[in-house]
Image 1 (cartoon, rainbow, N blue to C red):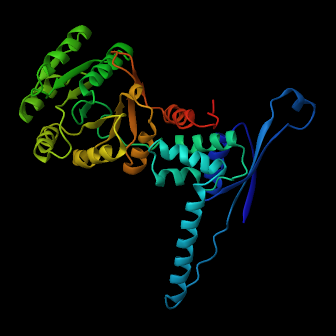
Image 2 (image 1 turned 90 degrees about the vertical axis):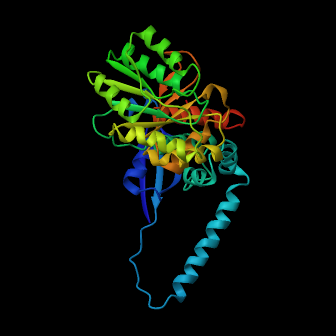
Image 3 (image 1 turned 90 degrees about the horizontal axis):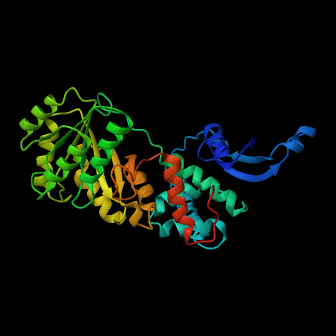
Length: 352
């Protein structure tokens, strides 16, 4: 067994160092607050001493015949089931486990966040460790396709707020970043959709093009080629309507490479969100945008979606105001938002 001591400022720093040096299998043995040696330590804030350990991997042994290997695998499987069952009852681990499951974060993710944590840790220290793990989980990188952010397409089911979100993005890039922004809409099906986006475009002084065919879309993109960013709005489509989704795919094929953002409502349960991802996946999704987080008490579902799909979150929206109520999904800030909801109805401490 390899044991190492870390002297850090907080649990987030400790977790990052432990994961980097000892790996994800490491277990925290103990934590305590200690003062630095000498007279200077009297005037400095105490440090957090964290001791972690990891089992040394034994050399592999070649076993002829599978009798022994099958028995070991069966014992391991039984122990894992026993540990999983016991985690749900009592103690800080069980307490946090139930709170996270109530947030629709899913069994698999919750187990990842709790594995290796010492039951003897104080609840607030354990909370900081889980928060750090959650932030790391939400920080999955995504490689851009072609010129980063040149053409961004918003897709998603009906009623999730794609057009309003697109207007917020347009304001962010044009008013705050001083970039040239062009708008294109493919949503000629919904009554008033073009007029709604045209109103936003007129207020911000941005060019707007309407395309009804892939060829018209290609021409619109060429016309707006001088812009730094081109934002494209699409009609809301049910995830199980293959014909309508194939139509969107035909439009995108005419202008790739693009970045595709799947816009989903944070008020939707995970089962339906996963169904939406499955339906839209063939569009080569790059990022999530979650809307209506001001209308939900269960943002933990976002973490479950990242864990289940490997797709990172680019933005979240927290209201209808344009250009406000749009935030970039910084992993640590998003983890804090989720953790605040996790502990809101429990007695656990929410890390600052």
